[in-house]
Length: 540
Image 1 (cartoon, helix red, strand yellow):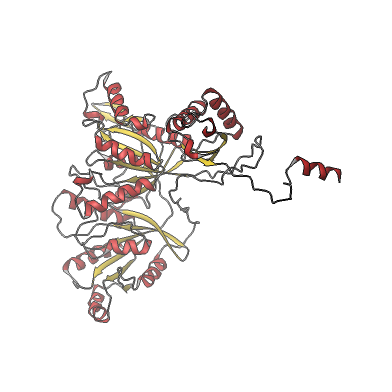
Image 2: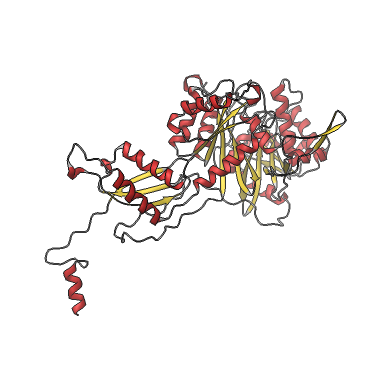
């Protein structure tokens, strides 16, 4: 593969632009011209410098990656070959922002499909990087593989920083002097585990980065909270007050792709992006880390998160798979919406419902993608039966949209992304205060809240409602006692809001809080708000 082809595949960042309305390319078939069924997808080159961490297996690349990011993003294990895909994350040092890439270990003669694809992922990272950090192991010393890797890096003609890892005492630092024989001028002795020499390494990396010509293109990501919650409505305000609370509107959508093992999550991610971002293999458990990739679709910024397959708790093996599942669950928590990928040949299993429950418990938007639709013998009733099967299994989320896709052929990909954008916009919808009050009055008059044990004094009383958050849409009800809210009446109010304001496919969050009790007046002092006090004030 030549250098130009490599650049077309990798680009210079993890940002991709997708325009589904681009005119399809024409290909020659049997002497004629036939339009491709899927629209052309192209990578967009962004002016964000990239730093790739390269080295042979088990020298501490993922440990250094986590240390620079100051968080546990990559899975760290003593087992060689733990990292397979390219992990890309943003980092900064002294005001300089860059993309940091963790890669799998380089080998001289990899055997097997997955090790070969790991080498291709590392080659892509080297081809796209502006600076390469070549990491070695001071304990094992200089090896023939290190020398071979150094020779490959010289051919890239790119700035290289040699990081000799696991140097945590003076004896190892003296023994590590043999790495000067590699002929790399920029050399730093570090210990990623003990945080030794990391600042010096970062200084050398930043000095080699291209001169900044544009401002930082990366905005600070949201913390993955359940929408923006503003202050509670003021109970002492007048009932007719229609001042709207300021609700922050998110500008970026985080979309996690989750599901069981071997349902096509990585292939679906690659098809959406239009390039090989994740390693695809028929072997279950190929993807281990959560891989973030930013794309732009129809003017919307979307961060796709490809995750490892989630098996039943009793089937998850200890070690790497356990950490992979934890990364996948964490991806759900830090996302706004979730695409649950299911297998059309094993439709709507109990594990699919369990994974959907993760999104339901965390108030995340959910879309079910029935993948491998090309393997099903379809007729005019098959899709209807499949849709009914999914809704029956996910009865606790009957409003979930369902899309039928084929990551292999590209069928239904545009419809899936359009559904995600539509659901995202629905989750940002804001209802005016006055319309909510009208709805509440009509709902209470139509169906009076039931009393507890027939005692009318223990009847639920709802004073007002106000929307206090989006993503998911969150509504706060002021009531006399939250304990009197029966789950059936909670569901009744939720359904009324759905029917009235068009929340057809998203989760709604209803919160009930007690009314603020009036402050008791001191003995002998009338309340300033009393009618007598107001008359006395007017006479003055």
